[in-house]
Image (cartoon, rainbow, N blue to C red; front, top):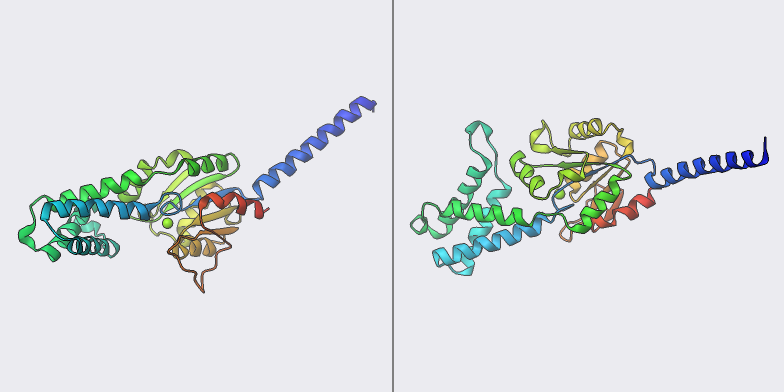
Amino acid sequence: MHLLTGLCFRVRIEEQRGRRAFCKMENNGIKAIIFDLDNTLIDTSNAGVVALQKVGELLKSTLNLNDGAVETICDTFKQKLYTEVLDSAAGKSIDDIRTVHWEEAIRETAGAQQMSESLGSDCYKLWKSSRLQLLTMSLEVQALLRDLRTKYRLLLLTNGEAQTQREKVEVSSCEEFFDAVVVGGEQEEQKPSISIFRLCFEMLGVQARDCVMVGDSLDTDIEGGLKAAVRATVWIKTTWATESDSIKPHYTISDVLELPRVLAELN
Ligand SMILES: [Mg+2]
């Protein structure tokens, strides 16, 4: 072989080896990342707090109530929200159900005579619009997702009632950052069921071992990821979260922006 041709050949081989090594280093054998939405990519808890404050101000000015009574109404609404049961057979939308939450919360605290016909609906509309307005992904999170998408397939997997979660996905302009979006309320079973994870693997065209699951809930995101046998689970530990004796994530971080460090460790 001519000396120069041989040299070029060797350089080409070295380049190919280098590229392969680079790809491996970049992807760590991981092909896809599955993200939770609420309190993982968007600050749903804070949006909820601010939305309740806004409704509190409305109640105070409309009903002339003191701070304690307003707080009780807001707490009662929150309680009803956490324990609500969606009965699609009854033909009620999530908007109807949550409007009734406000009506009941006001009636139970301030009495029926205090309430105008539209107050429950006004409270609900203000709560919903204020909350949605704050459910945007920060520029840093957007940049992270854009960067990750150059190396991995990304899927958004969010639990919850279909309309509510779709509205969040829409206002946060999430869809453009992901290869697929799966909403628990539209499926037979939600996280942590294995079936919804299998659906995600299928949509991504990957195996469980090719995936990393990232989320703030031990009970749904991490337990689901562990049961589905993903390569690694990454727990976003919020300030109010407590560790569990039975559900042990592979990695724990306090902010999704720390994810690249975990991915590098997975190498
Ligand atoms: Mg969450």
